[in-house]
Image 1 (cartoon, rainbow, N blue to C red):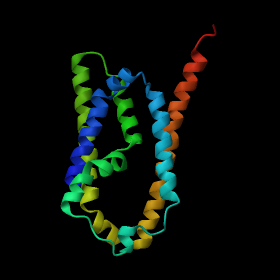
Image 2 (image 1 turned 30 degrees about the vertical axis):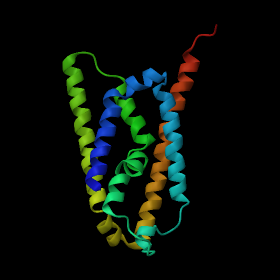
Image 3 (image 1 turned 60 degrees about the horizontal axis):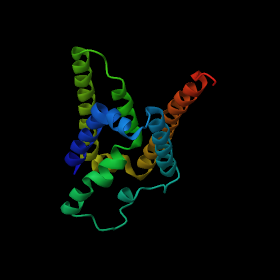
Image 4 (image 1 turned 45 degrees about the vertical axis):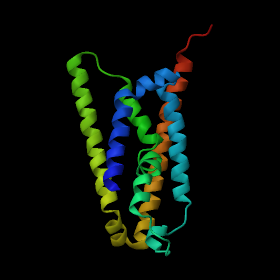
Length: 181
């Protein structure tokens, strides 16, 4: 499952970087709008993690049945890849990176290669985190896991606020820069 989530994440992020801005144009959406919406969703997810139970079920060992391999494969894209691993925040960042392509073939090619390398590094880190999640959780224990989840949730909340603020700032800037009729 970790391999499937990593591959799905790579494909989703690379598509967002390379063609996402064109898809937004089709629907008449701007990057600032995506940033505001993505930031709000990231904040909501972070808030729920901050206020969730102290001990995750996986660490608590609550005796629930573990899903089979077929069920895990079905879950690999939804919900594991989208929205849990690659959510609105990362998609809005990828869209923003791909929204202003450089002029000239050489610059465009180098930028696309750099984006692809960056997304590949993210996908490899996703694979490693999912592949070794059980060992990491076991090493941290229930208390350590709870601390890491809370700290990560707070950082995620801050990232969501920053993403939303970037969009709000751009929207406000476009209103202020607009001449009065």
